[in-house]
Amino acid sequence: MSLIRGRFSKEMAEAVKKYTASLPYDWRLYHYDIAGSVVHARMLAAKGIISEQDAQVIVRGLQEIEKEIEAGSFQFKPELEDIHMAIEHRLTEKIGQAGARLHTARSRNDQVALDLRLYIKDVIRKTLEAIKNLQKVVLSLAESQGEAVLPGYTHLQRAQPVLLAHHMLAYFEMFQRDKGRFKDCLKRADVMPLGSGALAGVAYEIDREMIARELGFSSISRNSLDAVSDRDFIIEYEAAASICMMHLSRLAEEIILWSTAEFGFIELDEAYTTGSSIMPQKKNPDVAELGRGKTGRVYGHLVGLLTVMKALPLSYNRDLQEDKEGLFDTVDTLLASLEVFTGMLSTMQVNKDRMLEALDKGYLLATDIADYLVKKGLPFRAAHEVTGKLVQWAIKEGRSFDRISLSEYRNFSPLFEEDVYSINYQTSLSARNNPGGTAPVRVKRALEDARKALENETGNSG
Image 1 (cartoon, rainbow, N blue to C red):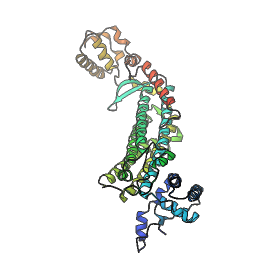
Image 2 (tube, helix red, strand yellow; image 1 turned 180 degrees about the vertical axis):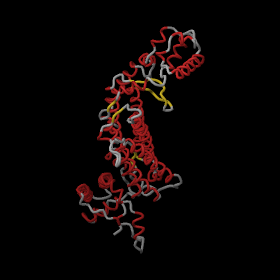
Image 3 (cartoon, helix red, strand yellow; image 1 turned 60 degrees about the horizontal axis):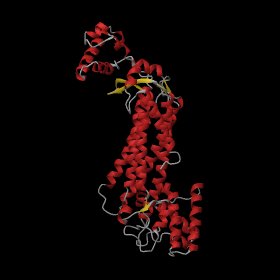
Image 4 (cartoon, rainbow, N blue to C red; image 1 turned 120 degrees about the horizontal axis):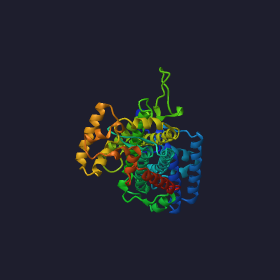
């Protein structure tokens, strides 16, 4: 049944058929394979390489095959090895000799390179849209919380007060960079490789620019050897996906921590949590935990493909068949993660009171007191030392800053005056009034800028 066994006198061993078959997973490329074949057939006719009548029959046959696949009536025969051969075999079954002319002036090597680039371009657009949807929820959450304040952390220790909106906008920025990486990847995926043949080009006068134009590519590949063996665009997608999953994992970790009884900053919706098989009281943040766990899976696919590529000589080698399963799983994992995180954040409730309670522990205004002394004329390092001793004493005495008398303050520095009591969380926030800071006026402007950034992307996701 094989279409490419003419040189061989023996049939392929059954174990080899199973070992080399990619049809069980590369069938997902059928839409892109058919789209490329349709344009290829039309180009062959336009250049007089096949007849116009044959081209019309081929195109009709391909369109019917696409309907068969989408209707679930198409028979995927494992012995046909891959989606390219499966479609070509079915086409020849349907239309006869004309179907055998479709593969003129192309190889499976440049055919699969074309399919993958069409697939990646489509997937990047979906990825960009999914990230933007998550950003909308992040932004809405930030806007709806007004000036809710929580402890900012370094080393997972309470550090300084920050606005919750400022905290959420940090993730908005991460996802904005992710979009930039995917858009950058799109530029290099947007190169049309068909016409490169197996490795050296094809011996027909074809019109590569026509194919590129019809399929929506910005340019054609410049070197046939590189075009059939290049998988940089897949590696770039997987690298960008890995970084995006890392950002989701960081967010997941905070959601997991914040939803614990120890923090209690947020309450996850029941639709995005699970129970315990033995402990009836449990409400587990499994969605966030799975997002955190699946990040390593996506990393693995990136490292796997880099390892496949690291010692491949030019040009095409069958090792490259290993590029697809990891890619498909990366795409599925990332898009599913973006979707569930969008839903989880959109239904999450914020407990502002618990955040405020956490502010009262940990002497979060210590830096502001040091800055207060600096403004009174003390060098910062000296102010840092004075404040550190003050905190040490306050901890031993069990005192918060507002319960220390002025005379006690002056035991540490004569520069302390009555206005030290004017230092509070709001003055701390307002003092960070530089671009990028957590001052309410800066955060309000950042929210406006973020909203404009999303609005300017409407209808232009790449």
